[in-house]
Image 1 (cartoon, helix red, strand yellow):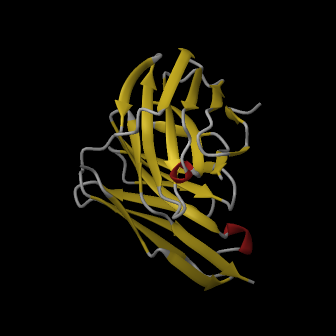
Image 2 (cartoon, rainbow over the protein chains, first blue to last red):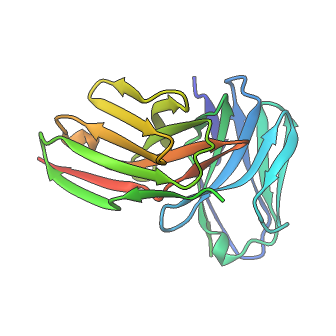
Image 3 (tube, each protein chain N blue to C red):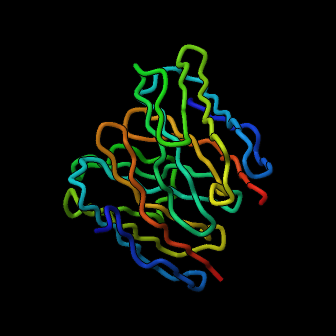
Length: 110
Length: 110
């Protein structure tokens, strides 16, 4: 069974479109995250949720809106996509500081 | 603000050699430190987790050490194999987030 699963794996879209990435974890973890990995492979946190509540928003543009319907899900909606949004987005969950990551969603904005 | 640095950025060694990857962090107030492996186009796989109270952890050919007071960790890989080729990331755990280094891209030549 996949611990942290995110869909889709690949997403190609035009500038200005709105898109969503879904994430689910079956580990029973309280905390979920979204990370962005840029072209230089640097991973940087975007959001952190604990028990459905937003804990961290690391200066992410408000075009990015996370939604956590329950503790096991953290979806990411992106409005008005820009070229600079092209990256790999990773969902993760943790309990006690141990992180488990999804396989990533490669977003390409054209 | 926590900053994590990994040296070297890239490393290429012949098969069979022992090697050390380095990770340093600026703020010693961490919960734990985690080493991950990332294969090209793939997600992150957790290799070792060292709690802040621990000095080292071992798993097979991998040994990770932690010196919290000096802000350093090392990942030692014994008897390297071509299958060890990947990017290795260290991450320190702080409240509600993991802060990552830039990674070391390791190539093991047969």
